[in-house]
Image 1: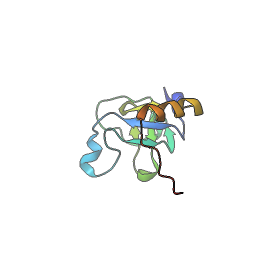
Image 2 (image 1 turned 30 degrees about the vertical axis):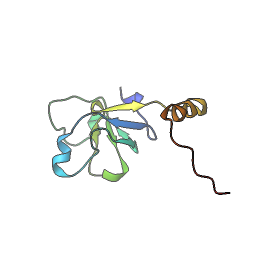
Image 3 (image 1 turned 45 degrees about the horizontal axis):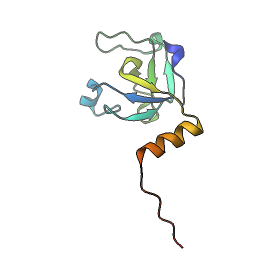
Length: 99
């Protein structure tokens, strides 16, 4: 639903949108911050047959383009502990420390 999305949310693009044919919009697999959320009646032209509960605006493509929320999955925010655990699971090399 439209209430599920808000500015500041992180969105994972899960669809190869036709918008890429025009050189706009996020690529599949890209994570991007939502700048604005629009209800369907505020979007001038719907493209395709899909109904979306809302449309997401991203800074790089506003004000001309917004993208159906069904093409994205919200990445839930992490607590500090969850973030630390996630980073530890990545097993990244320790940063170099100059002596």
